[in-house]
Image 1 (cartoon, rainbow, N blue to C red):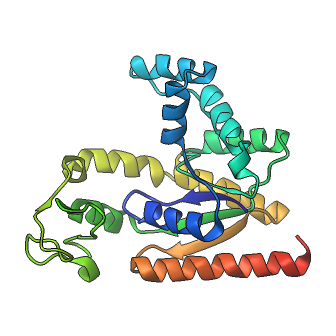
Image 2 (cartoon, rainbow, N blue to C red; image 1 turned 60 degrees about the horizontal axis):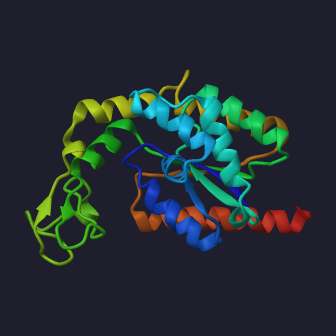
Amino acid sequence: MNILFFGPNGSGKGTQGAIVKEKLKIPHIETGVIFRENISKETELGKMAKAYIDRGELVPDEITIPMVLNRLKEADCINGWLLDGFPRNIIQAVRLNEALTQESIDVDVLIEVILDREIAKKRIMGRRLCVNDNNHPNNINIEAIKPDGDKCRICGGELKARDDDQDEAAIDQRHGIYYDTKNGTIAAVKYFKDLSDRRGIPAIVEVDGKNSVEEVTKELIEKLGNLSLTRLKSGG
């Protein structure tokens, strides 16, 4: 199953992606990791990307998309993949779809974690990290995982806030790109939804990001399971 995974920063998309990866036994692919691997291995694309990064410039799609395609064609992707965080805008969506079509690669499913922008922002700013274990969930703005005062709700350890989680300007900038319905990530999501309306693929799975991690996971796994059953019945 080939999956595109979308959701704003603060939606818990990373957590859900890790769960889907384990459930379906497919690689969870992020563009940041692709960049780092290509640069560290000094591939031709990696060298070109590094030149842009060193100048403080964005890596153009003409480099990024071939990197992504190369990763999707690696051996561990033979049974599917979950691509997370790309495309980020409508232009990348169009170019990625064109490149996948040329390689005869289908996107089977699009997953979208839907969350209101203000709720997403509050979740980011409410995150607190336990000094003993960063995986202990603590968030002053989520009742289910609200810490015990200034102590970790799991182990009682000291809590700290990440500086970038408190940078409202940076959060607004990232969310500005994601929630842009004309040119941004939401526009990219709509592009693939329009493809689904016309071609029947990718199948669209929407989950409500307002719910707890456990509730989102339950909804997501159930919907993916129903898709798998439908494909088996249709012989797809």
